[in-house]
Amino acid sequence: MTTVSPVTLRALDAPGQPTPSADLDALYRGFERELLVPLWTEIGDLMPTTPTPRATAHRWRWSELLRLARRSGDLVPVGRGGERRAIALANPGLGGRPFATPTLWAAIQYLNPREDAPVHRHTQHAFRFVVEGEGVWTVVDGDPVAMRRGDFLLTPGWRFHGHHNRSDAPMAWLDGLDIPFAHAMDATFFEFGPDEVDDRSTPARSRSEQLWAHPGLRPVSSPGPSVSSPIAAYRWEHTDAALADQLALESAGHPGVVEPGHAAVRFTNPTDGGDVLPTLRAEMHRLRPGAVTAARREVGSSVWQVFDGEGRVTVGDRAWDVTAGDLVAVPSWAASTLAAGDRALDLFRFSDTPIYERLHAHRVAVAGQGQGKAPGQEGTAT
Image 1 (cartoon, helix red, strand yellow):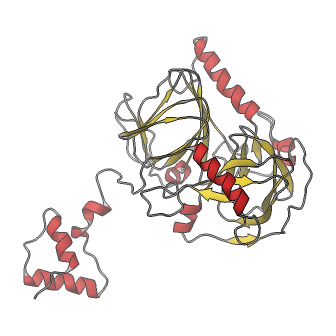
Image 2: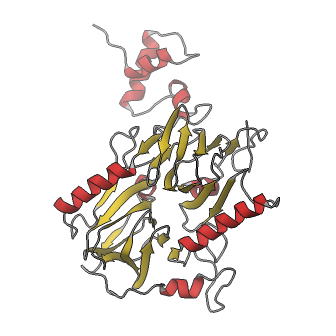
């Protein structure tokens, strides 16, 4: 019995293909022998009219993540080998890989009382966002940085870092990294450091904050622009005040909010005004009670985490009621909408936008704001 080559079978399902024949099938078999693939049988998959991401929209409940993290704290030690008690979100569209999206890693990390996570470094860029608790210090290149509720903390690539819990209570937080992107690019390096952090002091402010975390002020002694932000911790009191002031100005009739009832800030690198990390963007959003955002699409993916309040997140044709700690993955070009409940809704967001902007492949579409522009340009579309 004569069998038909797989390339021929794919061609039969594609539009505008030549008439099947024995000669055509022989040609396709020749392609297969030489490890060649004709574009005319694949163009629909390789060049779709809009992005068709494998990742899907998904919601993870913080209550379930925390329950499993606590159980892991009972059963799984922290030390060389595993290095971290971190539990990664696995997007259901990515075949079981520990990736929240094709470029973003998100995980809950859990540290028991009086416990250390050993020192290491890697080329992947990382941050921590603290939903609840305090008592842990992360030590980045010898600089102890306190971790407290609402704080956004940076660990740029290739910086030695470890954590130690100085309290009598466990602590959990969100880890975000560009692990999937670095893995896909074959650009990863990793190196062990000491088994324990080299500075076990517990200062209220890190040395990096003393030098850099003063609004609008830059030390004259500093060198030129740096690839990543030199600020180790962006403290909640400043983020909270910035969001509150935006909404207060809106109430007084002045501009400043993203859209009615929706305040937002971006964490930035004080040396150049850009993103805090070269591959990751981080933002904080606040919606007034009852506020609803316009549907938004963006090339590239993101992960949202509720910090405070309750509301509803809609991504494509899926919608979830969310509360503090819950996480939602938003795939590329999926329309997303946020809605606050009876009180204000605060959300942390991180995305891979800097990658797409540098590749001139970024595009945004916001419902009701006109037609979008070409990739690499600012623009919106209905």
